[in-house]
Length: 409
Image (cartoon, rainbow, N blue to C red; front, side):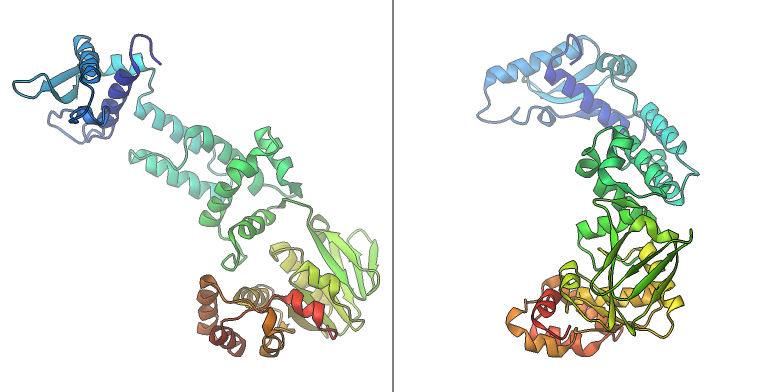
């Protein structure tokens, strides 16, 4: 609090400066004299109330009179009675008021913020778009999306994440940039993901994901993980790395490869006639078939994992591809996205009407968002029979039920 001023006096002067800074005069767009005023009720809500303590009103009036005696304000009174109708800013004392309040002029503040954003241009196209938008707002006398203290951390996080090429855990990222292991998740994770989604041109489809899954998928595109990420293989698979080393899997000896190692894979040879991608880990662990190779992508299939599937398809042209997932609109959106992003002709496995009928007692009703997605699938005629059945019977089924109860899988 500034020395010599009461809390109420400081609030009054700040509100008057707010009015001034939001005026066309301040923006240099007004050639006429303009006054800047507030009513007492803006600070003292019950100033004119029927039951307001008169001692409190008198105290307020004295504090306002003291401001006028100092030259900072001009008071207008209701004719004939000692009741203040308006508190006006004395523009001759504006610089003194800024100094007394230790308040930075909003133009200086905005210029400083514009300079801050300009220093982060030409690093990445997402940062360019984000910074440009904030500078446009500031130049238009509007506040930026975030206060400067928050924005500088966001800019440093974006710079690190968008330029990152090696796997890093979220808490490692947090301490590397913010000096605190939990601050990223607590305060910045959602903000960063919204910026990347809003200003980026990601190759992944985020429409089917809940918010936390969406954030995970976005960050994984830049090798940032909440936990280590792996791709699981179960079947007859031989993996050849670019350094000449190899690793093999069998139905009884599955393997898991970290996401960081994916880029080092040169060739993958599959000695099975069928490749089945499995949506959920529980089902992957349950399924067993010596004639098929099962792949669990550990979460949403980001760009790196899509490239891996393309590489497998490139070196195993005679293999049939299947996808085993939830029988719900999300499951079919995931299947569609797999096909669209990899160019592989996946067939759904145990994701048909027969399963919905057979396991009807385990089905759940569709939620509002399910129905929206189902109708979107119908518009593009993607597996109409199953989608129409789900809508007509208000049902969906999790794949874990099928992998648990269906011995054929």
